[in-house]
Length: 459
Image (cartoon, rainbow, N blue to C red; front, top):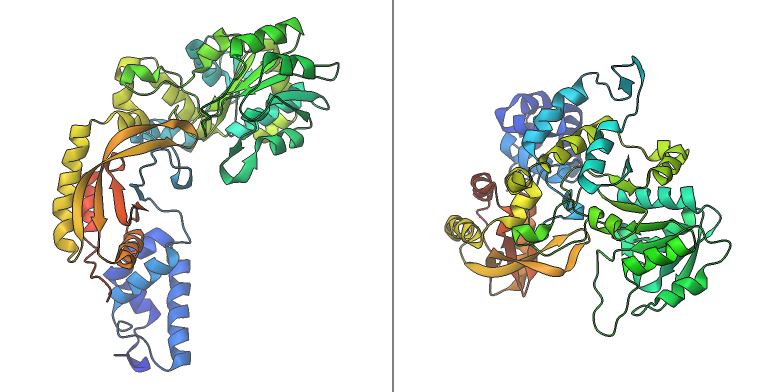
């Protein structure tokens, strides 16, 4: 059934209707008004509108569906990947975010020494905490991990060679490859060893008068097993000292606390790597550390000073929001015994299976009456940390699984979930939807959003 053109409501009436107020708050009046006009212009050209064109609620659904891909919006991450690069990576603490609000909405002493009454060091407070936590002589911060690696290479090996094991020539998210980053940094990559086996003699044979530094990359986003051999960090550090070269280590994700104390797999820590002889160590500010996106470099003071003098440093430096939030997050590490309660990322990773099962059962009870024709089950599962963290280790988890005799119905349902007022993002595996409960900490809000499904299987 169609709607006659004379029955189309006016734009002003629609904008003032309660049904569209949430849409206006989310996308803003200019975008919503333009979309409403575009809808009605199209119908006038066709001579009629759809059956819902006379009802404001229909417009709200249509505008939300169309503009949902045109604005950042919160989602529920039930994919089974905890640190999901495409979904914003590490969760941030609402309490810490409120704590830094005055620091980003008012003037602060970002680069001002209040004691001396003159310009100061914008990274001082973060650097003080990083050196305390890692035992490093100095530290610096840039806007992401790739930038940290680029700054190290450009500062210490510009126009010179850098030997790297072939087994560590990684590709990170978005098809960014280590060899490309090295080239753009102005140094020349020298590949040593083979994909699965590299020896100390391979590095030693690649060193000459043009060598700028030695680089070791932690393969944080993949794992090689079988007939393998890698040069240990202590061996490489000894060679670097012998040849009077700096040794830089890119840890990728990195963590400032021993994860095994929380029953999680071990991941190398910057303080461990420094103790084994590295001169510089770079790692991520989000991912396993649990703060905002940033690239952190810690190590010897004279080398950090070279990084800070590089003109590229200004182009890569973080803003006040990043520094303020990073400082507040680092404060949490002063009390590791309460870290799992206060850091959302660690809290998610350490949630008990009993709690996950309780969440899953409540989800099952809520979804079953909404999905006639589907089978909703509670299923043992596993999940990955994600974003290049602990690629060879998975965490036990619990999922709600949804299946249907026709796989097309499953895909249709998952699409419907992504069109909810707060999109719910899951995954399809073995022909059924998997909704991992480690991402369901806001369970009441999630169930309320899912109550809008009322999904009827398509014939």
